Length: 58
Image 1 (tube, helix red, strand yellow):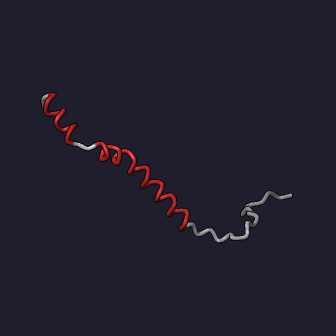
Image 2 (cartoon, rainbow, N blue to C red):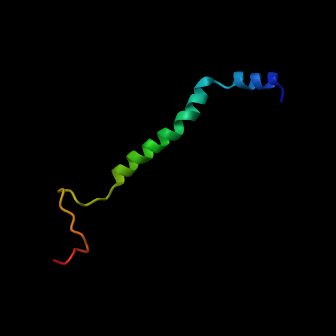
Image 3 (cartoon, rainbow, N blue to C red):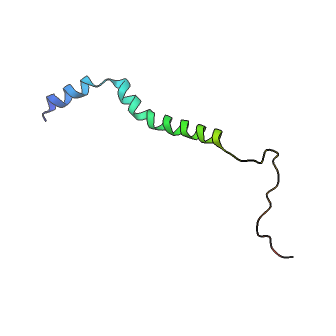
């Protein structure tokens, strides 16, 4: 591949597509995180105290 062919291929690829390829993976991760927060099935709605399964003997 010559330098002229490389320059032609760079010129034919739009800058907005290059930016899209940089930012779409991060946007996908953010959307997955927001979706995971909505699906959270924690049934503790009252902010109760955690009771450990194994408590130390006193």
